[in-house]
Length: 232
Image (cartoon, rainbow, N blue to C red; front, side, top):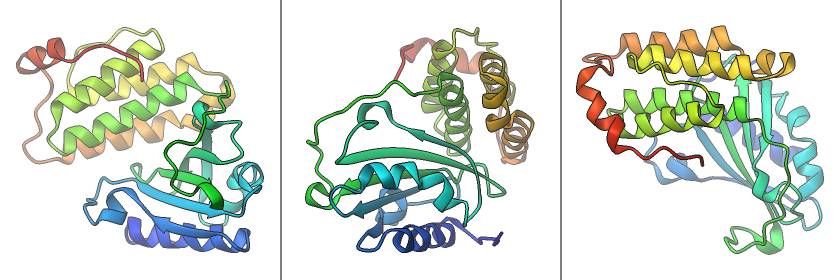
């Protein structure tokens, strides 16, 4: 597999394979990469506009298509649009690239491209353990960006989502604990997809390497009390 110097190079490679996989489709950068506000912790946000009628097939083939760029660890489709023929929102994790480079892919039918009023067509295929683990990764990014309240909300929702207690320890310990809890809550296949040792150790390394990073000890308890506990 190729080595990518940054998210933009990775996004460009993904864009090429998507466009080649479906003639008549087009791919564009959105999110922070599209706006030019990205940083080293940004994920990859793309919009894939496909011919009318092609959305379900495009979503179904996604894992195989993206395997040409990097090994695919998991593909999750947001429940709100899982049965939609007009729009899908898909989250893809890869192995062999930095922890934070998740792909968030919006797939649109050409006649409804970027239409925020597309009717929902919900499904029920959604892994709570994987979702909780993604909260842990998001919390890691928030801490590294100096946004403790965001990190606190992500961790609280993650533990709540899978019914596990929050150890209320330092950031690195809580993030690793949430990944562990997600693995314990999932099936054997889900545990393999989550790749706990890799994800947890990468998160610990990034937090430990951050200059001036302090654990979420007594000074952060007030933050914990202010953030509402909810589920996305």
